[in-house]
Length: 311
RNA sequence: CGCGGAGUGGAGCAGUCUGGAAGCUCGUCGGGCUCAUAACCCGAAGGUCAGAGGUUCAAAUCCUCUCUCCGCAA
Image (tube, rainbow, N blue to C red):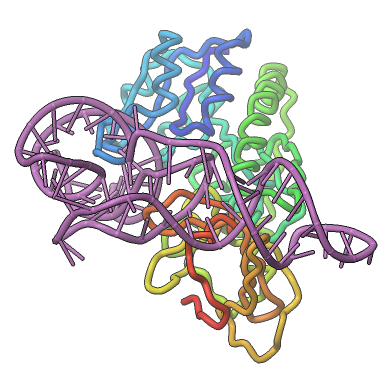
């Protein structure tokens, strides 16, 4: 089939490469406009664009694909289907209806759960045992289209959003190939989503990482993993921002400590912080302006005393 | 030219303002104590103080430039 690929970040790349190396033909690629990024604010092209340039695929980077002139351009591309994975823009009905086979989306959750922008991160934050990817026939709603195929992925106890991202990313290629195969044969079996079961996974931002020590230790531990590597869970030590990268739920040393109190310092393993229920052994941290490091290394150079309170 | 922090033995830091013998906490190695130890005691190795240039009798420290890392912002 002739495919229009639509995607932007690293997450989209393995699927794009799979399609390029398949029997299908990627005739065009849509990705977000190049933007100033990172320290120094240098203009950077998107990961998807880099791959396209190498592969010689025409790249389209409209700022707003909804605009009528952009819709016309899209319609004039001779394609059978569009494959969308983490593109970053809402597609209007005219676009969705343009290709004969419509637009198929690869979403990083088991729909109808975790519709929205940050599905796998929220799956980790909420302590789910498993998640996965779903292909769906897109409609105008936010991830509300009919479901086509799914792949289930287990979430390990030490899973971070980063490791899960990599697993899901790699699973996308196979699933879309199967979906395309069924589509060509006319054997797709679209299943309506049960809206009553739907949950929403809103985009994350910096503020979602502020640790509330009054919450149960397990909840905080899930938050730490779900926000790793971005935007990261953090707290404040002596007025300085401190990211927490790794922690482990342990028993509370003493019930009298208010949540957020450092109740035990172990130079070898880290330090224990009292939480709303149980406590957390902090094992890897990063103070502002510093590299991330093992808690034991951090304790070598930082005079951390028991009784101090994190905010 | 977006704002800011940082680069000092293997790790994490102090020392830089007020130039004048390279320190701290750990780790490593050797020895001792011990039924034993991740504990304790004694000893040792390991550094062109990111790099280049400049000022000075003298630079980790002051001046100029470069490289690298990190936080914010996007």
